[in-house]
Length: 350
Image (cartoon, rainbow, N blue to C red; front, side, top):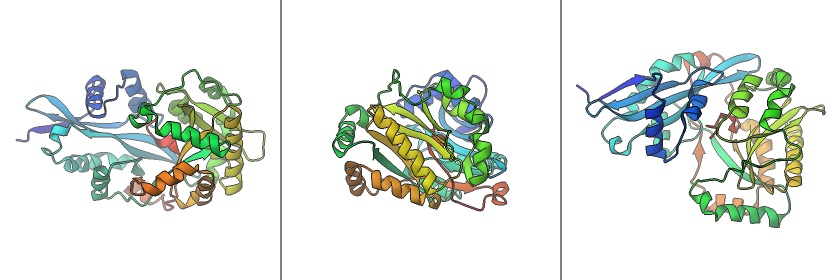
């Protein structure tokens, strides 16, 4: 009889899962944060699998799929994102984890049109590839300067040499107020999101859904950090941007325009950079995937990428963060175009 067993999530498991999460990541997550992330998504509760050492009655592993609402023009889709896949270090050579994930995948993949991983270390990438995921696309990171060469590169230098940066303990600027941006409370009451995605989705292929419910859950009710929203409404080309602030650097969390093309994207980001500069924010950190749909926008980001970050990326070329994707049987009849309009809205949100 096997020493190991598994089961799906039961009410009350939040505490032992958070204990496992802390022992592996050294991050503390409250019950409220767990419930928000795994149980309150407008797409429904996550698919959560727990692996136990039966002899010690100990939780030793976890595999989770977070459901996220997507659209493909007029079609509504449900994608599943792998998250919090983890095994205690002392058990990583004792169990054949890929067998567990393969077994779980056969159960839950029927309810999704596609599965993906946002990021992943090489070991996780190998596991996903063995399960049929394709790693053809990767993330590109940029630090866009909002002001002159000196201020922007000085800000990045301070960030690189800040101990908090290297320890991944980023300062949360909870008391920040940004002129020209809406707080989460203000954005949640704005009627822009009552109609925007209905207008924009017909011009997008595969993209995360941005109805009010999606934005409310992912950003405005998020217990982990504060978000600021910039709406471009009184122009012919409507759009918005969502950012957060850490260590006086703006992080691009999400963006969309009603008609995704080079001109409209550049207008949106020029407006954003102007507004950040007025608030004495000199850097905008952003990630974009290598999908062909973003070719012109990534070129714009390349041009505005600060000098120090270009040098950093030249030195560390091998540090590439891939985004593995798997199209299920139900999705294969719908999802033909692999150029996904992906932003950081699909990241964990912590």
